[in-house]
Length: 435
Ligand SMILES: [Zn+2]
Image (cartoon, rainbow, N blue to C red; front, side, top):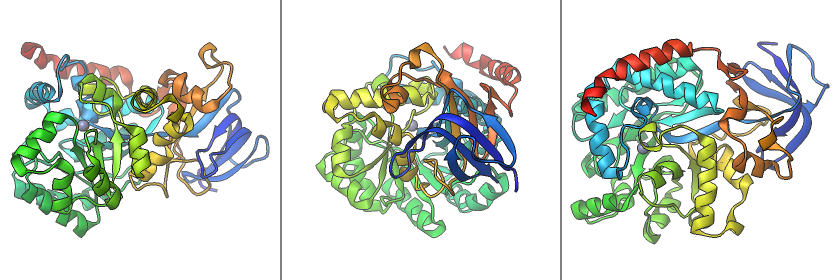
C-alpha cells in the first residue's frame, strides 16, 4: 500500500460531492495521493493515522485567477483604477521582474495561498517556467502557461518566439514536474493582443489541446477601448478569432451584455470572478445571479496581490456572497453555492473536475483541515454559512496536495519562511527609489 495514511475522527467532512454530503465523525484513507476510502470514524486501518478530532476537512480551495509573482508588489498601486494600476505596476515590473524575481514572488504567493487552504491556482505571469518551479517547490498544484502580448514584455520575447516557446510548453511542463495540471495558454487580453495574434493562439491551442485563460471586460474603459479599435466587445473579438471555446476561462468578465453572455454560454466558457480586485479598482460588480441564470460556470479568484493585496480565498468567497446580495437579493445567496464556486465549480471552470474539487473516491487528495474549536466558529447552525461568512484562512491548520502534507500545524513543510522573507525584502529594496 503505497504511501497510505488515514485521517480519522474528522468532526465535519465537507465533501462537496454530487449530493453535497456533509459527514459527521468521518475517516478518509489516502493512498498514493488519491482518496481511496471514505468511512465512519475508527473503521479504517493501514498506514499512519492522524487524529482530526475537533476539525473540519474539506476540498482545497481553487483560485481561478491570480498572478502569484505580483505578490512582490503588494501595496504598490493604491488609489488607482485599472488603467492607473497598469501604468504604475508595469513600471515597477520593468524594474525588477526578471526570471529569478518571478520565481521569488511566486514562492511568496504560493506559500501565502497554501497557508490559507488554497491548493490550486490558475496563475498568469511572465516566465512560467520560473513561476512553476517555485510553486511546485512550495507544494502547490499550479497551472502556469505561456503568456502572450503583442509587444515584447518583461521577458523580451517577439511574437514568433512566443509561439515557438508555447509549442514547447507541454514538454517543459513535464520536465518541471509537480502535481498534474492541464495545459493552458494565456494571452493577456483583447487590449494587449491583436485579433490576428489571438487567432494564432487559438490555432496553437487546438494543435496542442490547451485551454485558454485571459482577462475579459474587467472595466468599462477596456470595453470602450476595444470597441473603438475593432467595433466589437471583447467577447465578440474572442468569438470572431476562434479563441472562445469551452476551454476558455475569463479573468473578471464583469461588463458583459446579453450578446456576450449568449456567446459565452454557447461556447461553454467559464468566468473567474474576482470581487476583491473588482471593488478595489472600482472596476464594477459582477451580477452573479445573472451569470448563473445564463448557465455560465463561475469560479472564484483573488487576482494578484498588486490589485487585491492578498490571496485570501475566504475573503474572496465572502465578498462574492455580499456582491451577489447587493446585485440581486440576499434570497439568492446560498453559502453552499458560494463554497462550491471555490471548490467543485471552480474545478469544473478549469476543466479539472475529474481530478480535484471535491472529496470523492478516486479524486486526488487536495484537502485542508480547519480547527473549529474557536469562539468565532461557534455555534454551528449552518456549516456552509460558517465557512463563507465566519471562517478565515487563519483557521486552516493542515493542507495536503496530491496527498502530500505541505502545511502541517500552520507551517510549511517545504519552505523556510524566515529565509524567504529576507530574500523578498532584499529584492524589493530597489523599488524604494521609484516611490
Ligand atoms: Zn488579472
